[in-house]
Length: 202
Image 1 (tube, rainbow, N blue to C red):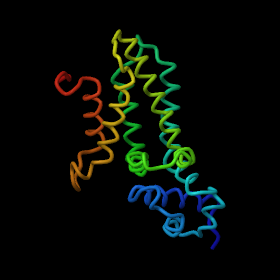
Image 2 (cartoon, rainbow, N blue to C red):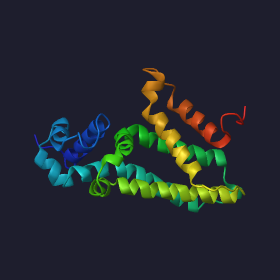
Image 3 (cartoon, rainbow, N blue to C red):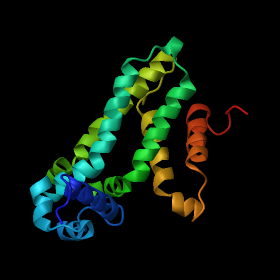
Image 4 (tube, rainbow, N blue to C red):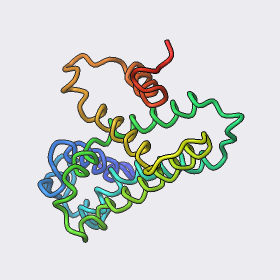
C-alpha cells in the first residue's frame, strides 16, 4: 500500500528525534533511523540528502525557529505596556516544550566539542550558537531597559536557557516516573527567573 505523500518524511523526522535522544549524533546511523521509521535508507537520503541535514531539520530548526519568533516578538515589545510575567511565561513555556520534544539536541550540544568544524556547520550546531547570541543580545537590551548594568549582560539569558534545558533533560532523574505537571514545572522556572529563589512573590 502506497504511503500518503509526505508520510516517509514525517516518519524519518520522528525516528530521528527518538534515536538522537538516546545516543549521540555520531553513534546514530542512517540505517538505524531508516529502520526505525520503517522506510529504506535510500528514501532517507532522497528526502534529506545526509544525516546532518536530517539532524538539522529534526532538532536544530525547531530551536532556531523559536528564537527567531521570540526575537521578532521582542522587537514589538513596549516596556510600559508589557506584562513581564506573561512575556516570561511565553518564553519559558515554549522553550521548555522545544527541549522536551527535542532532547537529542541537548545531548548533541553537550558533546559538541567532539564534533569537527564541518560537522558543527552541517548539523546546524553553529546555528544554535548564533541563536544563543541573539538571546544574549535580547538579555542585554532587557537589562538596559531596567537600568541594570553588568560586565556580562548576556549571561542571564544563557543561565536561563541552561536552567530550562537542564529541567527538560533531567526530569526523569529528578522525579522518576511521576514528575510534576508541565504547568507546575514551567511556573517554577518562571518564578526562579523573574524573582530568584529567595525574593519571589508569595
